[in-house]
Structures are given as structure tokens and as C-alpha cells.
Amino acid sequence: MPTIAILAQGAMGAGIARRLVERGATVLTSLAGRSAASARRAAEAGMRDATPAELAAADIFLSIVPPAEAPATASLLAPALAAAPRRAVYADCNAISPETAREVAASVAPSGAVFVDAGIIGGPPRPDGYTPVLYVSGEAAGRLLALNAYGLDVRVTPGGIGAASALKMSYAGITKGLVALSSAMMLAAARGGAAEGLRAELERSQPQLLAWFQRMVPPMYDKAYRWVGEMEEIAEFTGPQAAGIYEAIAEFYRGMAADRAGPQQQVAALEAFLGRK
Amino acid sequence: MPTIAILAQGAMGAGIARRLVERGATVLTSLAGRSAASARRAAEAGMRDATPAELAAADIFLSIVPPAEAPATASLLAPALAAAPRRAVYADCNAISPETAREVAASVAPSGAVFVDAGIIGGPPRPDGYTPVLYVSGEAAGRLLALNAYGLDVRVTPGGIGAASALKMSYAGITKGLVALSSAMMLAAARGGAAEGLRAELERSQPQLLAWFQRMVPPMYDKAYRWVGEMEEIAEFTGPQAAGIYEAIAEFYRGMAADRAGPQQQVAALEAFLGRK
Image (cartoon, rainbow over all chains, first blue to last red; front, side):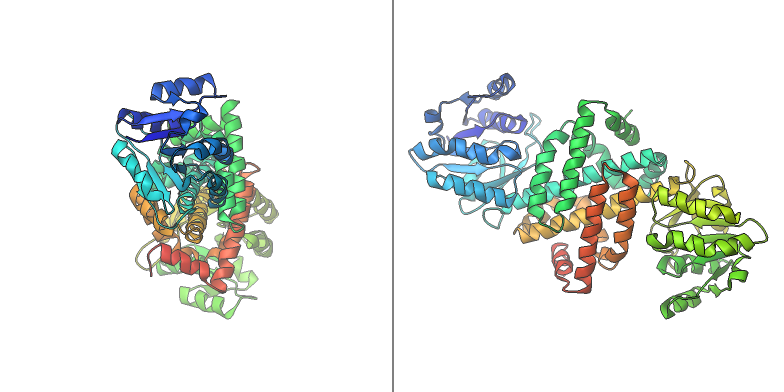
């Protein structure tokens, strides 16, 4: 029975922990410096608060944090990894560019831990059985497959360290990019008096895209603030040819997050367009 | 039987002219200063080269030119419009922002012609019966409906002058924007060693989007150079919230056009990703 350390306790980290615990795995975490909400999510998921010395007993470390915190999380865990009685596996599961993933790998290397590049596609595991896919790459990627016996859906993707991150970046660049484009155009059409016309034309010639927008745009309102950092990672990932597109999409999500926290005018306009009110 | 003047003789203009001529309408154009290719397309479509004085006899003027030429085309035709024995209809059918459409309307106004805002969604009419939709808006928009008796698909969209342009801009912003995003991410995935992984994940979780890319991306290679100006119009249309996204997409298409005209490395990478070779 593997012992898994999951940093930190967000919706995804806690959701994955809960699934592992339900299937019989032991999941450690560290609540040092964390909020009451994090502690509650950790307790509900069956995660055990562990000291740095206790963390060193974990076989597999999963870093599941906001993109900007990925390097710091690796540095924070380096002592525990170095103190481990055997070589642990450190999997960075975050939405970071392949370049950032290689930086994290380099910072983990001195501890003796084995680095695995990983990327999660989908939302947190749910009680109804839904499970996101955890893509893993690199020489030691196969070691994460042990988690499939505990309710996860781990799949090895070819291409070495960086490939799982590149897969996550490119997939998110398409899906979250399209959420931004469609939202921006629905808002612009509404301002230009063409909301009714655009909606009718989408129904006529792009009914699958319209259905996709109706499914994918509303969940964005509450996540826009988190997507800013992810879009900035994608800008780094894509290189000069398209970096400007994703820097501008990051700005768009910054504006959406401010609207969600404040006037909610854009949220209301999108809801009206999508026919949800 | 209406007499229609169509400026100029590109694929769309000539395609619409051919449909009208086949259904019995008279289509005038002006070949002054145009290329041999334009003259050939005009002749094949049954368009008649007309002097400025002859053009004045047209009931309906359709401006179908690259976005950047829309204002100049209106200025060029102003004398013919002013000389017309009755108030002609001038429909700007180009992919221009509502603001540009209003500028064109203002430049047409002194001639006494009635301005209609219009936007074409779809490709040129084809012999197999395919017909794009010509959205029209503004007080006099209904006068274009006469063309439906001659094989076109004209639809009035609500919202006044600017609304048809806003509809065209927002629709193209979604569809041509998505072609850019998906192309950029397929290219980045390929550079990052994740092409196989991304394609497998799209097949698994976004099969409709993948099919859409397979249908919509390849026709872009030859049109990318034309889409640059259209994306710049969309940047103007969308306002500060998303202008940067479309300015960057215009740059992306500029790069794709250069690749198409030169090394074709990106075209080859996209074709390989999409499984077309």
C-alpha cells in the first residue's frame, strides 16, 4: 500500500486525495501555514497532516498547486525528499510550461528523488466516479501507474520530461483559449447590438460550438482568476509566434475575475447570451 | 429585373455575381485598373465592365473587397452614386468593424444613396447550390431582400447600421480565432514532443473540436494573408478588453502567410498533426 504526499489541499489536490484514501491509500500533506479552509478540505478528504520528517516516508509526492507556486513547492519539499530512506518519486502535476517543469526537475534532482512530469486534464474526481486523466512523462513515469489501483486514471504519454506539461499546456491553450475568445466575442456582439444575430447564426451554422460554449463558459466565471497564471505559462510555452495571444488572454481573464468579484456586468451579459436566465 | 453593381471581382464578388447572372440579373462592375486575373474572373462570372456613367444605372451596389479597401471603394463610387437617376442602395458587405461601417456610411451619405450594412458568413456560392448568408442591417436593409429572387440568401438582422458588421466580426472572431488558437497549440505541442499525446487526448475528450480543426484549419493556409486585415478590424471592434488577443492573432496569421509563401514548415507540421499526410 503506497504512501502518497499531496501538496497542497485545493479542490484538485483534496479531490485526488479523497479518491486515493477511499481506495485504501495513505495520503499525507502539510498544513503548516495553510488556511482553515485548507485544513477543513484536507480533513474531509482524509489527508493526514504530517511533519517534514513524517513526509519523508512517502513513496510518491504529488505537487498540485497554482502554477506560480510549483517551483517553491519543490524547494519546500527538498529536505523531506533528501531525508527519505529510499528514492521517492516527485511528480509535478501543475499547469506549467515544459521549461518551468525542467526547472522544477533540476531543483528536485539534488535530493535524489526521481522526477516525473505530469499534467492533469479534467476537473477533480467526483463521487459519481468521474476521474480526470493524469498524464505522466519521463523515464520514471511508469512508477505513477501504481496509483491506478487506487482509483486514479494515470496514463504515460511519450516524449520525456516536458511532454506531459506540453500536452497539458496545448490542451488548455485550446479549451481555455476558446472560452476566452467566445466570451470576448459574445460580449462584443452584445455591445454592438448583434447578440441576437450572433446567437441565431451560431445555432444555424455552428450548433456544436454553441453547445460547447453553453457548457464551458459559465464554469469559467469562478475560475478566471486562477486561469490568469495558467495563460501566462502557456504564453511562455508557445514561444514568440503566439505568446502575445496568450498574454492578452491572461489579461482578458484578469478582467473577467475583476468583473466576477465586482459589478458582474460581463457575467450577466454572458448569461443572457447563453440563454441561462 | 434589378441591375446590380459589384465591386470588385475577387472569389466572393465573382461568385455572387455568377449566381445573380445565372438567375437572370444584370451585374455590372468596373475593371479600370484591375488585373488580368480579375478581368478573367469577371468575364467567367458574366459581369459586364461598365463606365462610371453606366454604373450609375445600378439599383444596388455591393462592395465586396478586402477590409482595408472598403472606405476607398465607397469614395471611388461616390460620383456614380451621386449621378444615379434614382436613390441607389449601397451595401458594404465587407469584414469591417461597425465603426468602419459607420465611416463608410458617412462617406456615402452626400451622394444621396441609401446605405445598408452587410456581412457575409460563409464561402462564395458554388455550382452545387451552396450559398453563404448575406446578413443586412439598417433601415433600408429590407431592400436587399429583392436579391433572394436571384439565388442569394439575404437575411435582415436587427440592430441598425453596424449590427451586420458586428455579427460578422463576432462570428469571424470565434471561428477564425479558433483556427489560430488550435493551429498555434498544435504547432507548440509538436515542438514540445507532445503532438501524439495532444491528438490522442483530443480524440478522447474533444472529438468534435478535433473534427472541426480537421475541416477548418487546412483551408486557412491559403487565406491567412487575407485574414490579417480582418483580425485587425476585429481588434478594433472588440475594444480594449480583447483587442490585444486579435492583434496577436493577426500577427500569427502574418507568420502563417509567410510560412505558406516560403518554407511551409508550419503547414507541414499542421498537416502531419491533422493526419492528412
